[in-house]
Image 1: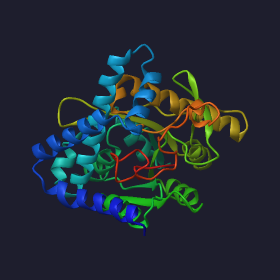
Image 2: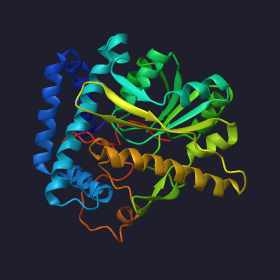
Image 3: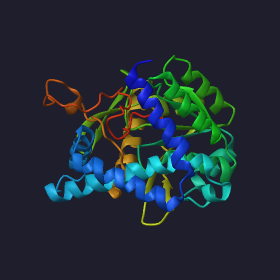
Image 4: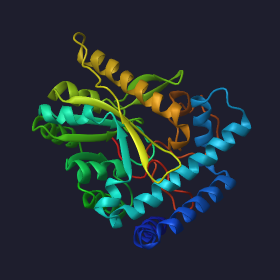
Length: 328
């Protein structure tokens, strides 16, 4: 393990070991202070976040974008402070920490026994929503996490999520899809963060007026297993309670090839994600390139120290979205 890898693993270990012991008001102030410091430094992640917000809020001027990126960093650090502390939260604290709308889409789907796929963007704190599902609803679920380097860091994320009641599969290796399909055919629940493609097999979608690529997994799983596909969006407000919405099901088209059906369904997911992101842009933690125009080296300005889509966290910056939060 390199010195950088040891430092990265040590920093995350310190977060889980120390932050969870802090009184909640202290953790909140610490997170906000770190966020403001990172925002003032205007590193690559902050600049990329601001650039992404410019697509979401196209009429925003420089002052508005700066305010959004500052709020976005505060939201992102709120996610981290909550995640470091979640293992120490009581069952009641988890149950009272999330309030979703239109939950009947999920509960009715589970009652039908055909399995449910929940697809989410990088909004607010999906780990908290997952912990809420396993505690308040008593529904275990399976998810997929990006395999990080160093391996010890990946192991920390797996242990953390398994401690919250999740079954975690590695994104790499090629066996995750089959396992997810089996869980769904058994009537289970699968949750996937699905607004950024981590493979070469993603589906091109229109997203805030430009083309992006999102994973095909959620749509393919729904087609192959008959499971219900539900978009979910999350957001914070001024209270300690995170909010969320379970959107209506994405239907499988009656006609077309598998690729055509997958394209239509993935676009429907992108549209639902865009609705939630447009309503709460500051809670969308996308500190990386997403749109094809940015991913194409011929079209993206250089140099740009923004992390690649498969980048792992570095100790000299605020943790980024390629941090094990999930993949599909």
